[in-house]
Image (cartoon, rainbow, N blue to C red):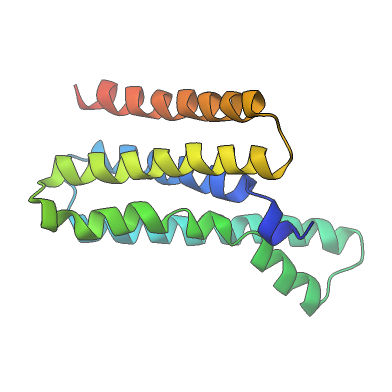
Amino acid sequence: MDKVRGDYAGAVYGSLLAASVVVGAGTLGSFPRLQLIALLLGTGVVFWAAHVFAHLFGARMAGRLSWRVIRRTAREERPIIEAAVPPALAAAISPLFGLGPHGIAWMALLVALAGQVGWATVAAKRAGASRRLMAVAGVINLFLGLLIVLLKVAIQH
């Protein structure tokens, strides 16, 4: 199976990362919408680059670094960036719902967590997991996401 289409670990990880970014931004008080969008996308790009570098460093140690390997690795790690896009879009369209800074953060956080649970469930399904195992993957990721929500609530109070 093609790793780009079949490995959802980066999307799950990226969604949890995006949720963490929203929580971290929320600890700074009212966080302007455009800054939150930039922070989500910028953090996704930085973590993508870090993952690409880590994989390439390993490939270099194995003596197989080439432009083809670099391009493939960058493409394989792309879901980390892509996972930041839905919460950033949620923040971008939040004015349509008349949300203030806290509402924007909650909307972006919920979208990131929905992505995390969704990608984990899709990954389990694509791996041939039973419905029960798919549900377990979803529940475990929901639990991880709820830990992020609890962190947000605890920090803001």
